[in-house]
Length: 489
Image (cartoon, rainbow, N blue to C red; front, side, top):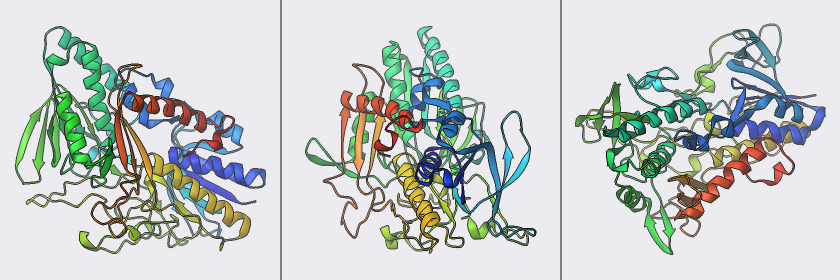
């Protein structure tokens, strides 16, 4: 019997574990280690953050789902990996620390034959003074990164709306909380959902709304922007985004590194090197991402973290990490199998793998401050990668370590994104976009880097209903309900 240990129960880890358990059956063991008791459909947290969904509608308990699938489940966080085993055994193992109430703080080691690191990111609030402490949200701003954060954001938004109804004007500042943030998407959706809710509440005229982002232009989206077909015409995402912001009466401040947060005020630095301050009454600023801090040790107990992980804490895989100028970046630099180059029985999926370089163009201010989005690896690509990794591990278990590995290069992968701009049965809107490929390939598609026949977008009520349906569809799939394998990643 072989044992596969999956670290993380998010989109990538859950996909890897559930497919592996289905394909391997009871002859082998699949183990999931995740610090969370609940699974969270993160794309719908923005609706929780404006009071349009409850926490219970975007989460469910993991234990019964894993019990149904025959998966061994530990509510714990991974602390370290010993890929060569230890002094008493050659068997590789991972050390975990329990987070469940009945075992909180207790440690244990779990031996494995194969390991998939799908731990996701640490929400690095501590990177910006005043934004938070370590991975914990601070007191000055709100967040929609977790379901609990979103509940808190909803409460604060309700308070702001009551103030506006009472005649007190409010200033909203939404965007990124650091110059190297990854995820503009959640903030993009959240600012338009707030605007929609303020309009519904009849207080939009009492609100000043501003977007602050590390993007060098609106519509970068952490993908270097894109050109897409809209209504039969090819337009840039910059024009698409600027039109939407102007239509909704939202100002923007871009190319900004939020350097400090205080009560009702942020300090920032721009790409031109200038600095400034922006006041707010309500702020939601996404933190940057980092690896969760896993350590790695060899058989003698020596630290080999730098061998297994990149400096940002994400696991090295089959990517080309050679340092090279931006003009020399290639689509072929990106990983295909997500196998660790040093230990062939280890893989990384989703946000846990180390990207070879940015997707957006690297930018620095004259002061040397990096201000650019870092690679996005969330959502649809995470599920696709998780399934490919599950395929590879299962084949290695059944056919031997030289089995063919399945591939899921982001430079050959298309993805769909549905960005909500307000929730409502008849009044909701969303921007529905497809991108192919996710990582641009300028050799294959000169000029735009992407195939404009498969990269297109529309905004409207239909997009909202697509996102609303996908919410229920993916939760249905994640619960392993009948026919779950037929629903695509």
